[in-house]
Image (cartoon, rainbow over all chains, first blue to last red; front, side, top):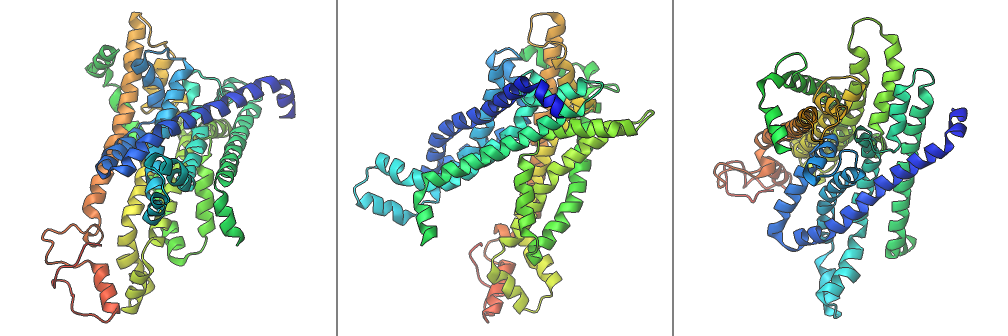
Length: 217
Length: 272
């Protein structure tokens, strides 16, 4: 195991970095898309069922099916990494639209009225009051999306994208010493999921200082 | 591209035979069904016990969080390599066992956590009322907690089924059949290029992808329909004639409060 690590260090780092990148970027893009959609679903009662319904429908599509069908829809090449990013973004949006909408709805009406009475205009109130107060709920969704992405990214091995999943196929294709690459891949994806989860929790904590004030009292 | 897909899908030759699409669908449904069935046998009673007694709740939260990070594909490959040397001769077990174990690991947490969360979400006043009426622990579980928790339990079962159907596709990589087989087979033959064999591969690839997605949606739809018609009307508030029935749990609360004026068949009560 140690031998395997020392002789393949550069390759393992490259795969880990690519895996991390593929897990995080789709969630960020997904959040940017889901924020306005979730806002619409929270603001207009009629828009909630269709938006959340379509999102739920997208979430039922198996990842491998989406990975291989996207070249047909986007006219990309089958081995293009764009397919993987787009597919994972679709899942992130599907999950986050509901979460953003529920988060915004969870802000109490009293708070909103107080903000309005203090002179906030709708846009200012959204960014200074509603969105920050919805952060804990949204962050919980972002954690789920990111951690599940770490597991989903490995499936992209089927469409030739290099990431930690590549170590699994490498182990399978070997005749001797099959275990080191496979165990390394499993171990690193677990560690990656854990680290990303902790980072999001840390960022949430930093973004919501008022919650800590409450705990201290 | 759509043409490739359509001509592959509608060619009867692709559906018949040992490696045909029908066989793939049957295999996929069988593997998924076994995994979800066994998961239900394990997770449902365990969830009921934890939810009813409140013991071991941290275990539930822990397994659910950990299961999301589970590298399913890697685990499948690892188990395959560990298990296959122990089987010799003509048997499919070295392919089936690793996939079933991983699918089981995926299916247990959503069912377990939702069964637990369902029981936890029951209004304590309703539970107390049922006890106050003299129900035993088992009766409270069967007649009050279970009907109230049912929608959440079913949604756990649905998300388990979806994940299992999606992940069973990956089993094709270690040589298992199912709907992953046409997808994997086609990716090896270079789809999305302008040659005759590539057009065939494109058709096979898109057909496999289409059928997995369709299967997932169909199963979800079936389970949603079952849920709709088996949920207690006391929960959904869906009455044939809304004026002449009272929700059972509402009756229990009222009975506990010493009010007998609203027995079933009495006046209208707002849906819960």
